Length: 353
Image 1 (cartoon, rainbow, N blue to C red):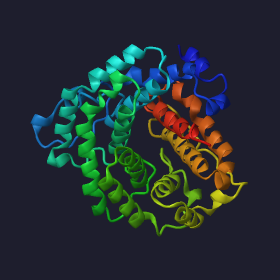
Image 2: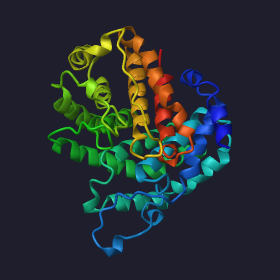
Image 3: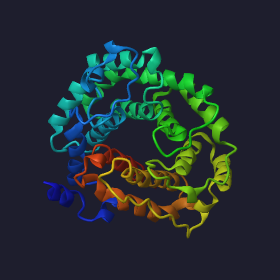
């Protein structure tokens, strides 16, 4: 089976960077399908107030208990909704829809809301899981598949709660978190911004923009050579660039970027992908995610500013294709989440002009 999936997905790794075919979509969909209702192994992020709060992952998080942890489950659900939207004839379509309907039921989401409404869980999944939940909500709302689009109403209360949490939290954050892992402030703001724009949430847009400018506008000379840290799965430099690209006008952004990342303007600029030494190690395999993070941000930059940054497309493809085979290498450490990162990179790739 492993060799079949490899063949189906990767006739050549280069061609995937150009086109996501139905055949490859079927292979990618199989990964979150395999784990979205797989309860164990599971890494919990629970703060326990007393013994009454003990429970199994499915008892505590009936919507998002699979795929090892809460946030991976959320973006695994996003992957399936995204693929259903792009490929109406995808294999196992009815199975995908059925599993989404079970997990994203009104009752299950109500329990997720109750969990996150606990006073001592205000920091639960802040802000990485928050960001992916809003991305999932956006994809549900714009889905052309009726059975899936209907689930948006179920998830909306959770999205509303998370939007409120952003509005409450960001003004309190005196200093941004610039790591390449879950708590990266810029990444958490970018996906939230996309949802705020799509949903017309003017207050969320205002808070994100004001605080992004407050936290990042004076940054210069991002240390690209310091990347990657040992277990990064997000590029700190590129993710900061991404939120500023979203919230700043063109003239202001390009001026800021020349001070922040002047090397990106160099048509000969080269940046080697992060090398993974052991994909059986759940932390070291993070570097595959880093490569996708760099790729999706370079694609987005080239899409909006092709004249200035079209030369980054081959470099983005290089990063993308380095890590693409790791998605189906048989190691659960990467399989339970990397398909979402690859699809997000492809999402930015297809937006290229």
